[in-house]
Image (cartoon, rainbow, N blue to C red):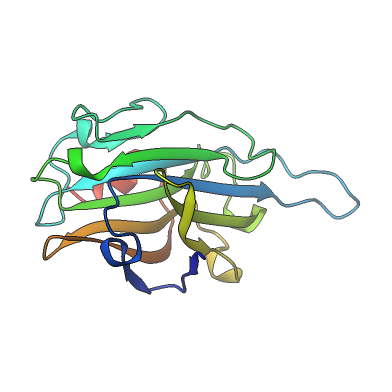
Length: 194
């Protein structure tokens, strides 16, 4: 049974799934319906993974996996493609992580979601509902952890730091972050880790 995480909660993936080597991070969301039944303008949410060193810095743009760079050069992280609308059931975007292939110089994987051109389109996470991030053990398709975003604290936010997977004492752990940011796109969000 998956652990439903609260904001700020941490779990050991190594303890929850001994022998875990490959996982899928799924992100999903729905667009809020307008009063009267219409749909708000489509929010194009983009999932990304920012790979940080042990000082919490991204030292190379190649260490950002997103819709325009679908695979990390190590082969450890693969983004399975961009969903422009959030329509459909289940995960809207998925990222595969092979923990054994993550280079030793990468200490943290930051999973983010941002609204494509959110500032210019005047869109924010107040127009999104049912947003979640979940981790699945690929070897048995078992969901390990899920973090559901809810609440008005994300109104006006155009980006979200959803979760991080990090190494600690030879273990892989996950932290539910859930911090909203007002960033003008992924580039601005990445600069905060430079």
